[in-house]
Length: 340
Ligand SMILES: [Zn+2]
Image 1 (cartoon, rainbow, N blue to C red):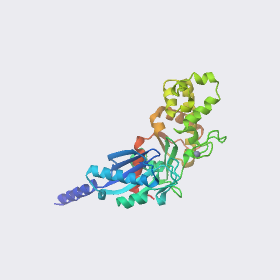
Image 2 (cartoon, helix red, strand yellow):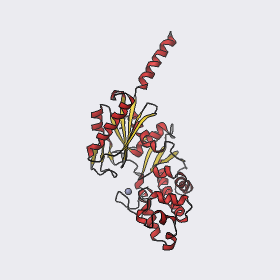
Image 3 (spheres, rainbow, N blue to C red):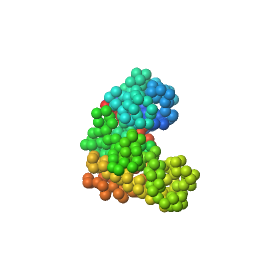
Image 4 (tube, protein in one colour):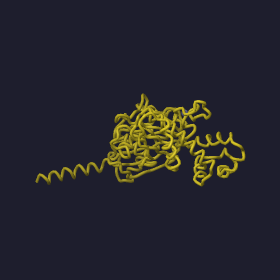
């Protein structure tokens, strides 16, 4: 009888557990992605749309609509959802649940958690996307059980999330460790999207790699540059160059492109070394579109050069196993942890 009772209780717990879901939202400059997840972090349904940037409130409206539609598709109502986590491009004011002058979205103030929580009737919380990703990696990815860990994203921009002694670092407004704006060139030859000069992101992020390439080529003999595949890729007009042109040309063995990729890798190592020197992690995972699309070309020079710049013991450095879903895992992790 006892075992029957226990089984009955367990069965009940499993049924209740099976009906508990979390919604994770990953808000970038271009795309908003929404996922419905169970408590183990299994993604049941996903949706993706271009960000509705008609006005600041349209963005939360879009998130509400997408969240409801995922629940409808699964045949449940919002009562089964325990929380909504939003991992968003910053800067933000985390305790108020708003984005403040976000670099990738044109509005001064984008309210998120209040309208979402009111309309959906569930708690909603906001986190910087890279900080959220670090939490996602710790709950669901390579950093499980690791108390000192950093995540770096090399994408349109460069960001970082860090867990130190088991605590996710957030800062007074939730904008801690804006590592993309670490100074790697005090001469400030290139200007960052933030308006300041010499920042890591200004040289190595997806949107700024073309600026770096143009700067290097400007100082080369015309013949050397014009013989490169890069010119063909950019159809003889370097103002049209995009980051993927460089990596594709390097992949085909183009010498100039290989040199530039190596130099970008060395700069990545310089930036990463500062993160390692500041946080002393035992593991660093690296993600973001630029990394995920060019794993070997990004990782090899980092691993080769980073030891030249660190004082702390070398941590394990690897590509995130969560791929480009890491932002969604982060959002789910935040919803489950109810931060702040
Ligand atoms: Zn900057």
